Length: 368
Ligand code: A3P
Ligand code: MG
Ligand code: MG
Image (tube, rainbow, N blue to C red; front, side, top):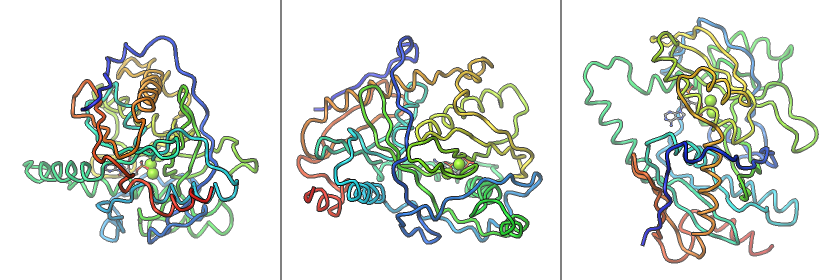
């Protein structure tokens, strides 16, 4: 039988706010140009402003695109956690372990109609949550069919998706700015855009009573990582969006900012740099946003209404409920249908941990 967590209108989560912890990075990992896992920060990039007027479609034919039809589960995150535990000699203290993207979906729920599916399992007092990859694939397939059937669209969606990654290539350098990066910067437009390469930060954060360990990709750093672990890091999130001309554009953009804000808030990314582009994919300007002040800035404009505290409170209450509800073994499905006013929770496997937890991780934990 399915359990249900009701989703109220945003006003239902107003009032008293929930305590949150500042996310602190305690580990990191990289994927190299072949998407090979590395336990280091080798794929970290530095921000360096892009040239305005650049053509974001340039190099599309040489784009090296990661095949995201393969289910990667939590594997890399678990490897990184196990390595950290080997160094500290004890298990991490999180109640929840997941990718940042899963909590982004949960936090956006009070303002969002979109459905999602996740798998969860309890292992040693901690709930591990992964995306239900089959559901995502099915959705992607449906969207691509719909796109193909639509008449008169000029730019294939894959080119638009390329613009986002190209903007990252045009706005980053592989080492801190200096003499040795001069040539690189001048020739950045000729660099092959490759989204197999990533730097991922692994943080400890908290919502209400829940301690959460999150892993997620970070686009770039502004300066250098502080010497002392746990200090705030000047990460930069890069985004592209269409130029804003009308009131409706502004409304849509302020709505988009909610996703940008949630995504950045979750990993403690303080700065979001938005590249504006023309309809044809020419970079026409960049604007810097502060993650911290974004919720108030948007409220002041009175266009798209969203309140960051509502997102935080919803996530806190949901995680509390999840921790009370997932109380024995097996694999659970967390599901929200499109436009539904509740999130369902039910068991899909009576025993074991499905593919959520790797044997490697369990073998390590047995030794602890
Ligand atoms: P833009 O967001 O600039 O369009 P991220 O911003 O999260 O670092 O992601 C980089 C780029 O990946 C995005 O650039 C977009 O092109 C693509 N991308 C990210 N999430 C996506 C999604 N859910 N669907 C399609 N493309 C996505
Ligand atoms: Mg990114
Ligand atoms: Mg980005």
